[in-house]
Every structure is written in structure tokens, then in C-alpha cells.
Length: 74
Image (cartoon, rainbow, N blue to C red):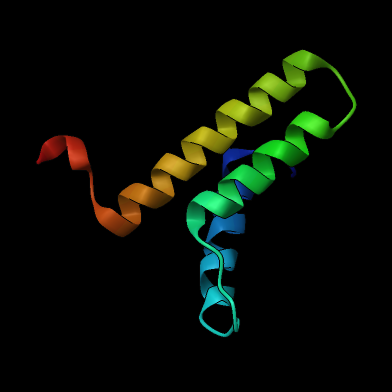
């Protein structure tokens, strides 16, 4: 379901895997910004957008932690 943490996590994982075969791969922050703009540009209730943006941040942090570890523990 669009807007859930799982949706965004899977989106980021798919983008990472697709970057392996792309001629001009994009960075993870670029995909993050793209999704953020998409959410902001959508019509709808602002509370719903806030939930989506919060879920996007949770998924982004989760993916970064999976890829690079928890930098706060260093």
C-alpha cells in the first residue's frame, strides 16, 4: 500500500537493485527526494501527507542502516 514504511522500503530496495543494470544510476538520496516531491505534490489531506513523509523517513533511515550500519553506535 502506497505510503507505508514497507512500501517505501521495498521501493528503495528495488531502486538499489535496478541501479546495478542502469547506465546512469541514481543515488539513494536522489530517490528519497523524488519520493518526497511526489508526496508533497499529491492532492489530499495534509495529515495523510505527514504520515507518508514520516513513513518515508523511517524507510530511508532503515535502508541506510541496513546498508551502512548504525552510525550513532560508532
